[in-house]
Length: 152
Image (cartoon, rainbow, N blue to C red; front, side, top):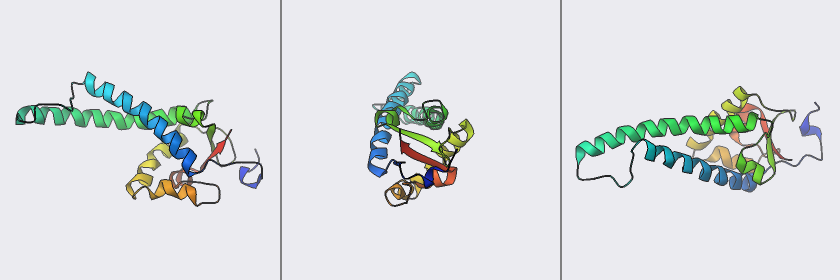
């Protein structure tokens, strides 16, 4: 496949449209997260006056958060490496994720991209904001994983 960077007809997904897709995916993942929290008996309205109950709830919440991180990573990797090449949020705004040459991602590359989003996040979200200023609208995690986000 030819290098998509050389094609003038390729339209990359910029910061704002990607933010919209991320919000949609965030809503979906938060619904899943809160369902898991309820299933594991974690309550945001627990008895704050009982230290033993709070300790038990914090342990359960830590487990739910770890499970939530795994779900976040697998959600993005599975959807982006599928034939859809996009999460539901990206599908809604007509974006897809490709490798540098415009091809479909492998699951491991997509998983690496999702894990690299942690780096994009911990540096005050600058890794995400980079998509507004780079030539092919790449965020830091796209650069790390060798991926592109473009319109379908």
